[in-house]
Length: 118
Image (tube, rainbow, N blue to C red):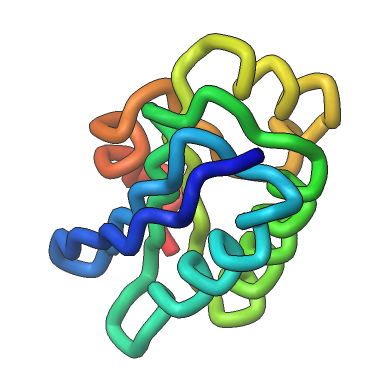
C-alpha cells in the first residue's frame, strides 16, 4: 500500500519541482497525477517530478505520470522526471517509457537541461 502524496512543491524561475511520495501505486496514483497537473499554472514551462526518494512505482503510477506528460505537452510545457538508477528506473525502462518521457538521474540534471527547453 502506498504512502500518501506529499503536497510539496518548490518554484525555481519558470520551473516547479513536485516531490513525489516514497511509493506510488493504485492507491495514490490519481493524487500524484492531480498534483503534477496542478503545477502547470501560467508562467510555468517545466515541472520536475522529483522521484529521487521514490522506492516503488507500479504501472498505474507510471500510466498516470504518462498522462501528466501528455497534459504538459498539450500546454506546450514539459514534465521531467528525476529518477536515479535503481528499481524504479528499471521498471520505467521495462515499460519502454524511457523512450517517451524526459528522465534524468538527478534533480540537478533535470533542472539544468536547456536542450529540452519548453
